[in-house]
Image (cartoon, rainbow, N blue to C red; front, side, top):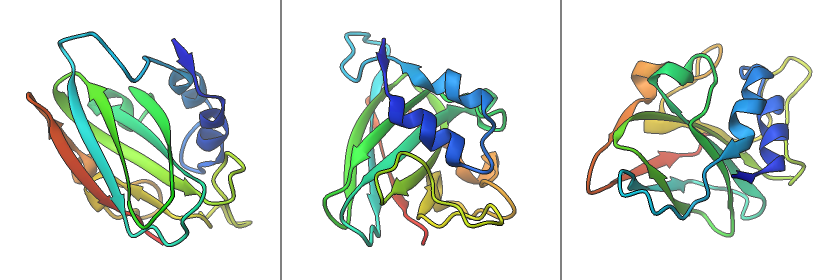
Length: 155
């Protein structure tokens, strides 16, 4: 198992993500997997204004989305207006929560009222209203032979 320490700060910095999620996301399978039951999800994030830092991505299934128990998590370096990565997942229905860690401190910037000051997004570019986007708005399918998903970063 590979550990990604920066994800603990990412998850702790989200006002709508409870601390219990940190332990669930820190350990996840290595990106390269010999498991033939998994298929590739190519994730592309667009509308990135600042070309530095990293996208902090958490992927959820239906059971974990509202309870903030991620299936996997990763950091994607940002060097331009778009960033892409490939994630190996079993076929199924998923939702993504992410933010752009512009300053590289490993946590989401928040104002004194708990509102994000760094860009964030959800799968399907679903809107956030008084918390994260709802599962029904964010869910999408990943099936064999694979899938591609594009998310527009919110400012």
